[in-house]
Length: 448
Image (cartoon, rainbow, N blue to C red):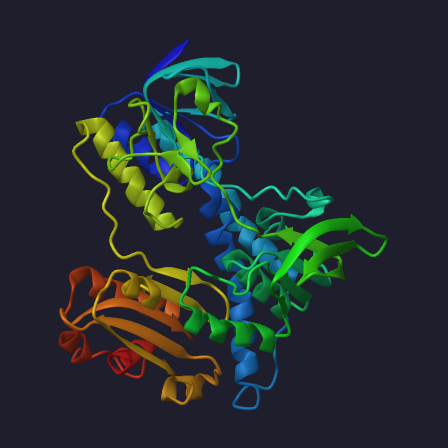
C-alpha cells in the first residue's frame, strides 16, 4: 500500500492546481486520471474549440464585409483546422506530466474507486491518503432512450476527421449553439432540437433572442419544445425521432450529437464506501470545499456542488482554495467574485452578474437599460445585425448589478463590466471613463 498526504483524482484545472500547490508546500502528493492529463478545457473543450472557432471567425468577418472591401469569402478547411487544433491538444499531457514529476508528484493513469474513507483502488495499487481531492469534472449526460448510444459527444465533434454534411444537436445549451455555429459556417446543414420553450435558459432571455435570430439567419434549424425519444440507424445515417406538442416528428441526418448537459463525473467512484454525501449536482461540500460527511475529502470544479459556475477560472479558484485549507487547516472560505460567462458563437454572447429576474427576486430597487445597438457606429462598421446590451443597475447604491451583451468582442468587453461589479465602481465613474476610441469598449458609457 502506498501512502500520501494528498491524493488527487482528476487532472483538470482544479485538480492540477490543488496538486501543484500542495506539493509546493512539501506535502507528498499523488494524482490520477483515466484520461490524458489536462482535463476537459485544455483537451476536450474550451481551448480546442476556440482554436477551431478562429477559422470560422475569419469566414464570418469576410461574409459581413463582402461588397464593402472584401471580394472573396474563404472556405474553412476542416482537415487543416483540426490538425492545427491537435497541435495544441497533443502538447498538453506530456507538458503537464513533466511539471508534476519536477514537483515530485507521483502520477497514475487509471480510474480510481474508494475502498474506505481514506483508501482508494487505483489500477493495481491500493492507496491510502490523509486527504483526498475529488476533481473529476463532468461528462456527457447518458441518453437513456432507444438508440441513445448512437449520439456522439462534444469530444467526438472536436475530433471529427471529416465534417458530416448534416448534423443534429440534442439540447439547447451553449455546447449545442457553439458547435452548431462552427459546423454551419464550415458548410454543414445543422439542426438543434431542444425540449424547452427557450434555449440557453440560464442567460438573460432578452439577449438570447438576438442569438436565436443570428442562429436562424445562419440557416440553423432551431426546433424547440421537442423531446427526442429515439435514434434509429439507417443507410443514409440516422433517423432522430421526437415528440413536439403531442405530435411525432423525425429528422434524418448523417450525425447526431449529445449536447443535453454534463453531470458531474462522480458516480463510478464508489462514494458510498467512503461515506461521501453527494447528489446529481456533485459532492456535497461546506464553505471550505470539504465534504460535509467525510472530513478527509475535498472536492472542486464540476465534481463539487458549489455556487461556482462550471467554468475553468472558477475551477482554478476552487483548487487554490481547497489546497490552502488542506495545507493550513480550514481557514479559507470559498469566495466567488463576479463570474463572466461567454457563449462563443458568432456573434458572441456574454453575461456577468445578476439577471433582471435575479435582481427582482432579491427585492433590489433596480433599473434596466436594454437596447439593440445595431444602428451604432461599431455595428455599422462591422456590418453586424445583432448587437445589443442589457445592464441592470442598483438605483440606491448607484452601482452595476449585471451586464448582458451580444455582439462583436462581447467576450472581452464583459471583463470590464465584471471588474466594475467586483469593485462596486459607481456608475458615474464608469460613465465618465475615457476608453480608447473607436473600440467596442468605448460603447460602455452609452450602455449605462
